Length: 492
Image (tube, rainbow, N blue to C red):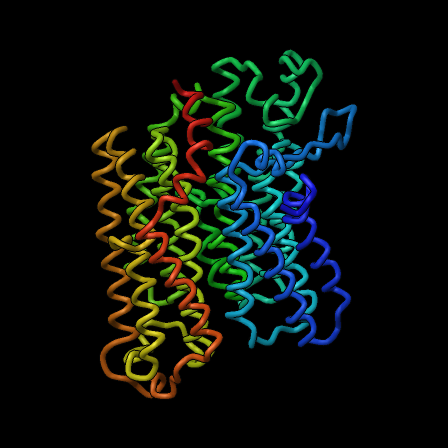
């Protein structure tokens, strides 16, 4: 499409990377915002172009391999399969939405703030593109490091404690991942690739004993579980989401948690199939417990940010449980749900930020009657809420239906207990809508005004996408079916 086979995967990484570095040197605030927005829009156009590759010859243009550190067997190996294209599109789509929604926000050192966000986007793209383990780890860290600084410098009053907890959890998980990668790498010498290699193909070809797989499984899984996160590795998340600037929280919950889900599907499942079969009940059990636990806590929350944070834990728990059922329908549902969850959760964060920006509070007990003052915001929020609880004809219904179908095939009791969280989600979500948007206004909410045009356009765009994906999900199936087939083939 661009006349050069390696242009698409390179641009998806290097365009936001270079744009982020340039942003550091722009001093004028308006220029920083305009440049950053232009950069993410161009990245979105590149990502959209990748979705139009269909035949095998065209798809070869989404793969690239170049020797990076020859004597170590490391390479700059980039590949965009269906799942990768879906997640790079989610990443590319989310950032313009986030930037437009927060365009009027004022940040100290604006150039550094937006520069770090663009570097985080480059890291995320690299994670979803890498088919070399060392390169994957490099981008894994590149995506996380800017977030440390964004949370610790621009966060709320308790940002230092929250960021420290975030750092300890993610650093420990990353260390486990690095140890696991090195161990598998050292076993690749006996593969058909002869020399040691970090390539995904070599990692999948390596022969590991049952004991080795069991040990390595937990090294990889803990790293990915922390990032998702799932119970009991979740305790960093509510504090970080609450204290981080809302635009950073959107990146964390809308896109960055998908790194963990993606890591499990791309790396853990195909490399350690024996361990997956052994520990599937343990992981699914933890995931289901986490879903119910997070949903019950969400019901008691008075802070909108913490409510949505616990809601996200419940949704990710269902994805993790569905993955370890290793059913084709469940895996395909997870891939679709990763995209749908990203869209819906970002929509919720935008609404929360709009409320806090006008009224100076996120406390549910202090709000009420916003529908009288901002009817358009209320209508758009209700649609996003319906999508968040997976109402039919919305995007999340498709993914959740398929995930529950796979979980039901694996074990009916897991599906039944997981289904409880769906009921609980309706309770805390609809209860929040009733208390915040309906009823009488009070001294705080009386000053609420209707949202601006750019804010309406962003939310309308998300709502339109919610209905398109809910009514006609076939393009998602076409995009992800090959990725699902590759994974499930390892378990037949």
